[in-house]
Each structure stands twice: as C-alpha cells, then as structure tokens.
Length: 247
Ligand code: NAP
Image (tube, rainbow, N blue to C red; front, side, top):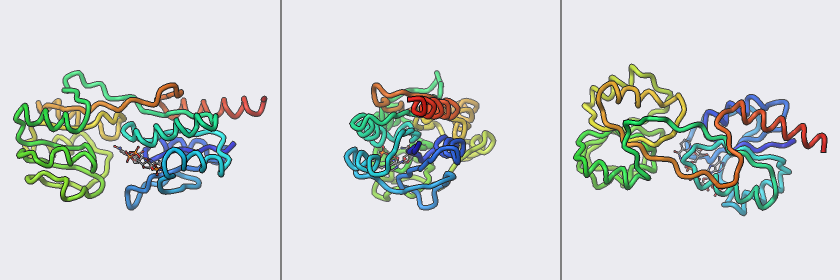
C-alpha cells in the first residue's frame, strides 16, 4: 500500500519513521526552507500545482492513502488534499496536533486582527513568532519587535523598529524566559500551533506577566477524518491496510 504523507512538521517525520519500511511511504515537503529536517524514506520536494496537480500526482503515483500531517496553519495544501482525495476517492486522514489551551490569551482570527490588537492596546515591545509570512501585517506598526523566524522574511514586510532572530525550535523554558526578560517584552504574538516543541514561550510569558495575543487556527477541511496523534495515524493506516487486504 503506497502512502503519501504531506509533511513539514515533526509529526510527519515521526509518522514516516513509524511506517517505514513496513509501508511504501513517500513524504512531501513544500520546499520553503533551505535545509529541511528530512524524514526517513523517499521524499519529494515542491508544490504539486494546486488541487488538480495533486490529483494527477496521486493518480500517476498509485497512491492508496494520504495523511495530511502539515502544519495546522497550512490551510491551502490541506484544502487541496481534501479536494484531490475526494475526487479520486483516495482515503485521507488529517493529523493535526491539538491546539494549546491558554485561557489568559487574547484570541484573534488572523495576522491583521493581531496587529490591530497590538495598536489598540498600545503595546510597545512585541515578541512576534507568527512566521515569515506573518510580519507584513505589522509593517506599519510603530512598536518595537523581536521577530523570531526560521527563514528571512521579505525586508519590505518588516516593521521599521525590529530585531530579527533567525532560529528554529525546539525552545526551552529557561531560554524563553531570559529572551523575553532581556528584551523587556510586553506582549507575545503567536499562532496557536500547538505541540510541545515551541510551547515554552507561553509558560515563560505567563511567568513574566507578558500578555499573549494568540492567532486561532484556520478551520480544517470539513468531512475529513482527523486525529491528533501519530499513534492514531499509524492505527488508521494499519486498519486501512488490513481492510484492503480482506476486501
Ligand atoms: P500552504 O499555504 O497551505 O500551501 C501553499 C502551497 O505550498 C500549496 O498550495 C502547495 O503548492 C505547497 N505546499 C504546502 N505544503 C506542501 C507539502 N507538504 N508538499 C508539497 N507542497 C506543499 O502552506 P504553508 O503555510 O506555506 O506551509 C508550507 C509548508 O510548511 C507546509 O508543508 C507546512 O507543513 C510547513 N509549515 C508551515 C507552517 C505555517 O505556520 N504555515 C509552520 C511550520 C511548517 P501547490 O498548490 O503547488 O501544490
């Protein structure tokens, strides 16, 4: 049974490691970062060319099941996968890690709403961790920003007063506490990515009394089976494989 894992996350890499070599697994990455952490087994890199391109690729490569283990904010590829798999009747699972529960956070719907909130509340020193494409909404802000991103954003998208920190998690509580204290941060603006690897910033913010503005996730494609853990995704593939052997 040939399985496509749509990846770019730690969960996708863990899933490939759990399925390989019992299953014929190919992982797909968008190709956004120059030196991506690679899963075990075959990997293809680059877009498919929208839902139609993905549908053709699934067909050409005789894919029997797709696990969409992309990041919870990667809404376009998730919608394309739902569309392509639905069209071909290829079994499709979304593996989406549970969101963080942070009752004290101010929840907003997107980057623009987060920027509006920063302006409205008059925050002056912002720790921004919403990713390379998340900076543009803050470009006209007169606050100061510590911007932590994996890859360099477009310089045009950056606010005038900022410091750029190019780095990739995971992050520990102690380091996050020191970083926020040293930069006298008064608000953390983050996406609700979930997962343990980048959670420490939330705990550090709570300890230091730093406010949190949390961008909520886009909705998942409707009508698609969804699980929250790698174990559940492995079970789903095994069950599918047993059922197809019986059928
Ligand atoms: P997106 O907006 O949903 O996707 C934009 C386009 O990138 C898609 O239409 C597709 O191009 C291509 N693409 C995305 N994921 C792909 C994959 N796994 N394999 C092949 N093509 C892919 O995605 P994004 O938010 O830019 O994220 C890109 C990748 O980075 C995702 O794989 C995601 O898991 C990872 N990532 C994203 C975030 C985040 O905050 N968004 C954080 C960490 C990691 P075509 O239409 O040409 O097929």
